[in-house]
Image (tube, rainbow, N blue to C red; front, side, top):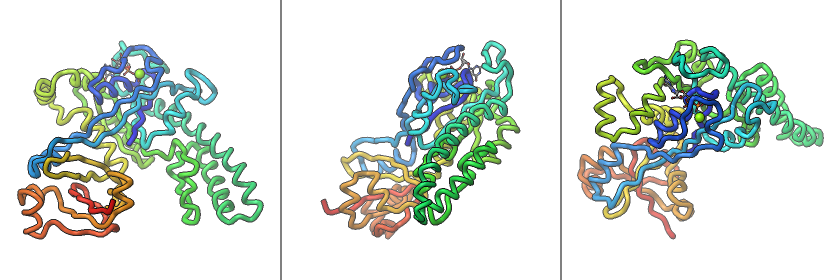
Length: 359
Ligand SMILES: Nc1nc2c(ncn2[C@@H]2O[C@H](COP(=O)(O)OP(=O)(O)O)[C@@H](O)[C@H]2O)c(=O)[nH]1
Ligand SMILES: [Mg+2]
């Protein structure tokens, strides 16, 4: 899973990136500090996995990860080649979701590229650039699809009509997300891969000591079907530099419930509608994975290894609580909470899965 961090220069992207990684990505009061995309692979800590690992005497713990890109270069007029121009587009295209950092703190020492603090205007600037990029791409695809449609191809006719609707929505400033593809061309969105179809988590970069998303940002997120959280990026970056114990005691002193990482990772999981599942065995690694909600244990097998999916026979499934409370697999089997499931079983959050497969 890859998440791109976007926002105007000085919004707090690199600070959030440092908070997420504990690594100090260059954070400076200067636009375009992050010229190369900064990539960090961050483990998703999960206490359930630790309990499972201890119960089955696993050899080690391997956490699921999320890759974060700190993507610079989005400024007003980027689609016309302002700032770093279109360089950022390719980086955004390869992400599964976006974290959109919006400046909501008033610190006069931090320069604002537009000269005033206005979170909604900043969001609009970024979204306009993404919409222009999508518009360009949708128009080019429509040209191609329209040719195929002329020959009477039914799918192409349906897709061309949808592209027409999409273009109208984009021209009105609405994201592609709001124009779902029709039932008889379900992969039209996937073929186009518009930037504004990606799920977005707004991160309001708030004053130290505040944890409220500005009302205007909340309303905007709601209207777009997006989520919003508040983080004080610089403070979180500073806390991330402390060791765990020191950081935790500072956080409780400041009344912060969780780390910036936890806030954003939780937001990303909700945003992408993911469930976590675990694999674990005695003297084997205990590992956490993620899967889109609603997908089957056969898909889960594919996450683990393509060979395991190919040779899928059945799966032994037990919820993590039941595994832990019965002291291991044999206890769970005796209690009947360890079930045999076929390939269509829909994975639930917190399932511990052992796939039986023919190599
Ligand atoms: N007061 C305050 N300053 C911040 C906060 N977050 C970032 N900054 C400062 O704003 C400047 C730009 O931040 P940076 O993370 O580099 O922004 P980027 O251009 O979006 O990557 C730096 O000097 C940061 O220290 C914050 O929450 N409060
Ligand atoms: Mg930066």
